[in-house]
Amino acid sequence: MVTLKGKHIYLRALEPEDLDFIYTIENDENIWHLSHTQTPYSRFLIKQYLENAHQDIYEAKQLRLVISDYDDKALGLIDIFDFDFKNKRAGVGIVITNPENRGKGIGREALELLVNYCFSKLDLHQLYCNISEENTMSFQLFEGIGFKKVGLKKDWNFTNEGFNNEYFLQLIKD
Image 1: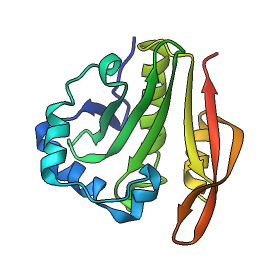
Image 2 (image 1 turned 90 degrees about the horizontal axis):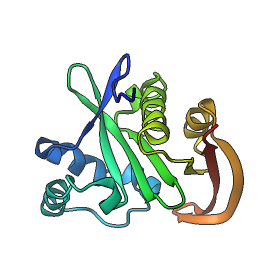
Image 3 (image 1 turned 60 degrees about the vertical axis):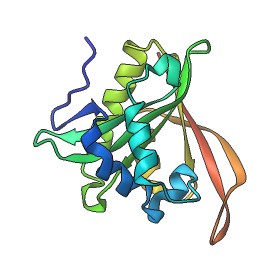
Image 4 (image 1 turned 45 degrees about the horizontal axis):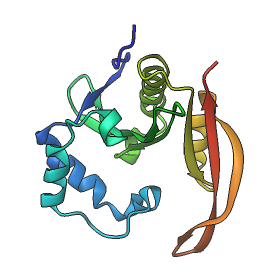
């Protein structure tokens, strides 16, 4: 049985009440490099996005879920993107919004729930992610549940500090 409920957190669909939470995340310049965001998002655009969040993953080719604790506090987001049913693969991304909540197992539990969902419910064969070379916490998270580095994209992303390398990681279903 597939469940999106863990011991300490659960994954849930986006709700209209998440507008301010999503707005804050999407406009946090400290994490723009993770999503390659270049400009701020308006509340209007995010409201439109939330209104269309009901689309099926097979139609939208993506799924965004809120990572929530059992007090119903939103802790972050976890995404499936580039959903490719024909080739049975998708990309995965995650952000825990409050730095104080990072390194406490929340991301790991959320990622394990999502991987189980992708392999059991969506019948995917593989998941992948892209991690910048200096993001050691993300490496620990993804490698800790079995993702493997399979490639290095040299000078892949341009930041204020110059070009940065990015690793491509995969997790292939047993």
